[in-house]
Image (cartoon, rainbow, N blue to C red):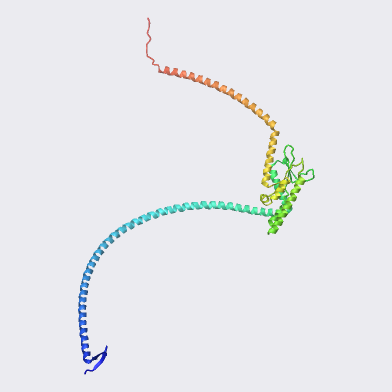
Length: 381
């Protein structure tokens, strides 16, 4: 009985069996080693063959690379020569272009400097104009401040409206065509009376517009104050319109319509826009509200009427002068006819003289054309 060393999968393993198995494993390992060495030898042979092929291929590639390198060297030399030529051409072209650009730049800079000088000159002129305008604005500001101080006083406001109205009337009419502060039959004294032609009643112009009421409207800073100021202005206007209608509309002495002068175009426009009831009330009272431009237009119409009246008054003088002018024209026509007769006679004389000179010329030509022969006279026994 052999000794059991161990059991493997239920099979007892003895010493003899273990030796046999070890020997088999050794043989198997040896076979495997031999097979591995054989494969390694084949792989080395294959690797050596591959290395030899690679060496040949590398030599061929090296030869190709040397050939390509020599070709590249030749091409590089050619390219270097071409590049050098092109570089010189490019440098020449660049130099020419730089010179041309420099010339254009210099010319452009000269032109720009000239234009800049002109611009600066014009700018200085404009600045001088602006300085003068600034001076005028400063003066105007002072005048506006002065005007504001004038309008802040009731008496000065009345004098301002009165002065503007008088200036418009005095600029448009002759001094005998109007009167300022004249006294009417009811001892009223309107600001201005325009004397109408043909003995017609005079036209009354009043300049006492209630500017203080309008001033309160402009100074109102809330709706309630504005409403109170507008109502007060309506009341002041109604009172003033009534006073004009009662004091200045006198039958046979003044026109049945009077003017109420408003010294501002903006106030006049706002009056027609927001106080249409005041305008209607003035119209019913035969009082026309006029602005400076409307008063100027009315003065021009009155001036045209006065000129027409003067033309009619001088119509007989004009007619006499026209008759005298016609007589002068008739005398001139007769004298021109006589002068024409003299010219006609002179022309006939000149024509006859020309005929005579023509005959003399023709005879001279015929005489010049004659051929005289040298003939001896025949003697008669």
